Image (cartoon, rainbow, N blue to C red):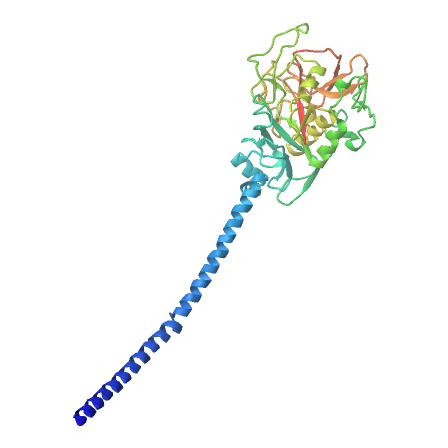
Length: 414
């Protein structure tokens, strides 16, 4: 019996050792697999590290996006919309591109022609589709929303002051703002520089009386709105604007056939093509209408044209249009035409540098003054039916003068 018991114990002991060895081997295999999964190329630890890094990056990106949203909301509430900033960066500053795009400028903006000449465009204006592509050809701007509904479509031409480049080589010609006399020299002789505007300088045109542009006098209505402001702003801007056409009547369907005794009809002044000139108006009424044309707009000033503006336009035209004697041009049509009519009876053109009718249609009131105390009001330019009046012509009338051949033109500056 003892022998059987001992044999059973030995057998049990042997089975236990085998099992132990097998167990150890299995454990070693499992340990190897575990180590491989943990620290191998795609191990658990590496995966865990990558996961942590991904979570960190996602967290940082989320913070950045939240900051963007927060900044956008803050900018929007403060009126600094980022989209608006992007739009401002895309403002068209090239004349040719502005003509093609029809860009309406939201604020007074300086743009440049192909020769790098600056043109300052007022807020609410755009370049006209038929504008010249460089300053020498006449840059035309058009009211898009600067005034009221009636004013939309009003057109003005840029008159440069100072050095003007006229070719690809950068060659320049200089336009000096001033008052000129054209009687003895059709090219013009400067009699008064704009720098000396406060001095009363008389221009003698071989008549009984002379002509002056005053800063002060007893009749405020005959003066420029603010001569000093015009000269200062025009020089700072490098130019000013002149109405492309004589001021027209927005409502007139045909030429007015009134007498001097007929009270002037209520009418709306516009600067547009194919409108009947706003005639039968005295100098004081013309001045009021011109001054108030953009009275509610803080971006621009309008006024009745001064002798500085009129004479400098002639110099500009003679310098760049090829018509070196335009100051003595006479427009020979026999009857009144709508504004912007190009041909006279001899098939000539009364348009230079995109500016119409300075030689014809109606004579135009200015803020210049005559030394004749009984007829102090001065008009310039030619008129229909008269072969003696010409672009640079100066004429004087009394304060009540109101005739079919008397109209007016505006200037605008910023």
